[in-house]
Image 1 (cartoon, one colour):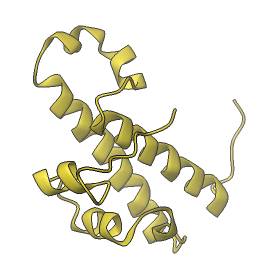
Image 2 (cartoon, helix red, strand yellow):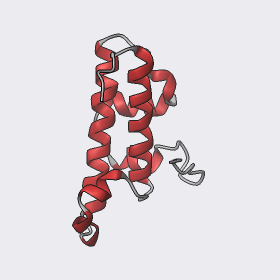
Image 3 (spheres, rainbow, N blue to C red):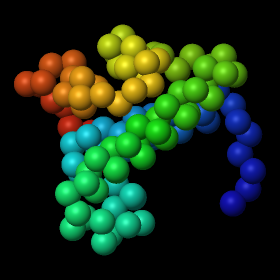
Image 4 (cartoon, helix red, strand yellow):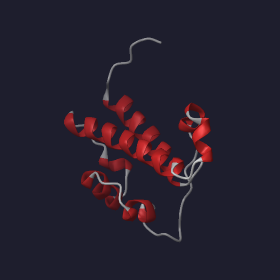
Length: 109
């Protein structure tokens, strides 16, 4: 695998991948994390941990975009930007990431 320059399109692509990863974890869908730790599926706390890992990845990449002044906020709704800027994965984030609890849009693979 060759070196990929860290350009704005590259980092925004990684941010979008992290967003999909978080949304798939939020929706309790399969992610590559399941493949890394298949034994954890048997434990109830697994889904919380899986969401935490995906949230951390999203915050890390959004933080990098912010640090190098790349426009990352356009990839999210204003409410989602606010959640990311607060950095805390609260029950509000889990319940209202899609804005309305009754209109959840599942993450695409």
